Image (cartoon, rainbow, N blue to C red; front, side, top):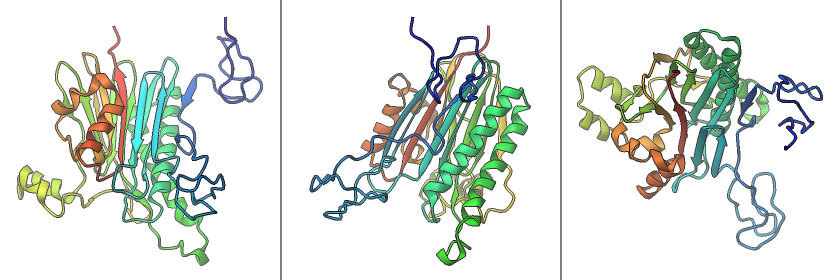
Length: 322
């Protein structure tokens, strides 16, 4: 039998251990790496072959910018899986994902989409995702109220993004810079799921018994549709279609997420995604047909449709307790 090891320090642990005696790691909790999962680093220049790549992904010999380790990220943790891709048009991947599970308690997952027009969007989305998933995992450990946990997670995300500005030296032009991102998350236990969101990243429930979109976009166009000013068809082509009415950022003011809780009675999958997917496949029925192939297939479809934006997809399976 293989010896169990701590995922942090690789010291031997016993199946009944809750904490690693060597480093103190909570063995009941597993999550994506802090700072986000990354793809393989570029070992040598794609143009001249030089191994001398600097910290900003430029070849020091020929000056060619190299693919970032974030350009394509795939990560699986138990039954939860996610893929994030730069797409075909963007210079960098400003989406982020974070997820984890607590043994015997449940799963938490977060997707954040950095607002491209803001500074340090990539850092904002990752800081927000990491901060939120930590709050949600702690809520699972403590069996806390899931809807309040979602509110607390967004508050933690807001603080983490605001710190990007606070920690930037004034002489570097950091003050006044407003990094920002969208937010969508799901907190799943054996009986229910709580979804929270800010912005236009979405959550879907995909099931053979009936699929549906769980979130409503925080955009000016969506607001006009809700007020009856525009039809959905008019909104899709309106210049305000992607203008956010709510977001997470240093200039966003006080942000409280929209939150819903559901208790599915049949098996299914919660899908979290950035608009790089739902711009091409907005209908839940169209998304459900892609499920058997995993998150890679969702990303592939968006890339084949044009890949105009970053694309991130996280799948969280759910089976109701018997």
